[in-house]
Length: 80
Image (spheres, rainbow, N blue to C red):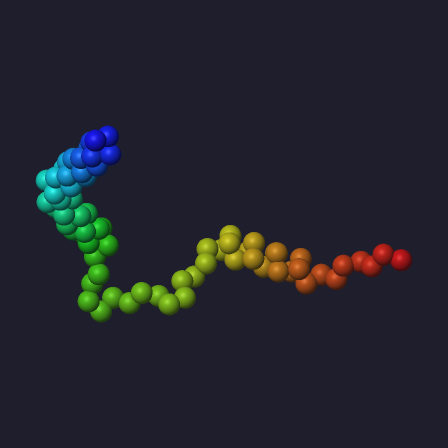
């Protein structure tokens, strides 16, 4: 008897969860469509527009790279 009651409670909880999801599903789909529209407006892709393959680095970043690479190339002093 106790096991039957537990199974019925689990079934009822599952049914209520599914029912709640089913009712909210159109709202979720509408929200996803709105998000896609907003991102399409923020990032318009124009025909013929090219995306650079190798974007240029900022000057400060390139300077840091050059400094760090030169420090890597320095020979290290050996201990006698």
